[in-house]
Image 1: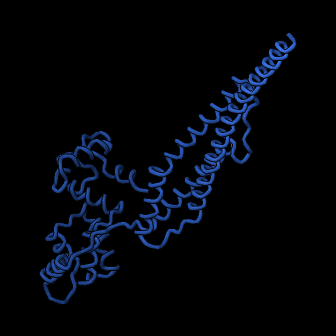
Image 2: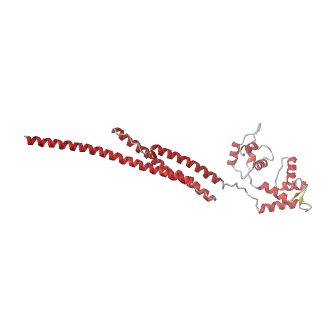
Image 3: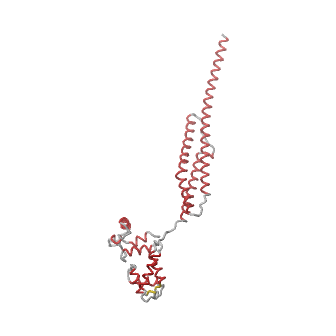
Length: 296
């Protein structure tokens, strides 16, 4: 009986040890799994923050160059970052936040201490990193736009040699005494032949004084300079208003019918009549107010 009792005693002790070992194994397996996931979180967080720091440095040290091509490349770099490079990283941030939440949920369910990663890889560090990146990206975007503005030039249509020849031909035709000068009446006739209108005699007198530079005659050079200034597309308020004035037969207001002169098309007229304010007490439109409202 003693031997039997000893046998059962040893058997029971062995069973308790195996139970203890199994429990220990389960504990270790859980701890190892949690540690692996925590290490995974830490590695991914550090990689994401490293990418953030590298991106910020790239923005801060970007060399813009001195050509339009360089400016366009900078814009393409910004677009590539915003459209291609950053979105997957934003997705990684969400995945990382989910991983952190899953780890701590499983620890809580199993009555374990919460996971507290190092300060430099914590969720707060990742969030702060993305905030720094956003600020750097905004500053870089502003720098890209300002650099691009350096290469935006206003295009103006220049006078062709054929137009200059036409001006000179008109000048010579009305230079009755062939002295290479036009008096006031000759100047007026030459402008009429070139379809240059004036609101009234006072407006003509003012123009003559300006073109003749306070003299009594207009030289060939002065005539060509004046006609060229009328023909160049400078897109200034005065030039645009004068263009509408010409269409309006020198009136201060313009009708829809007067706007329909090619190359102004039907869509152009619809746009203008929808945007121009109507003149007070008239069915016509106040082109002067419209032009003034669209220039600074």
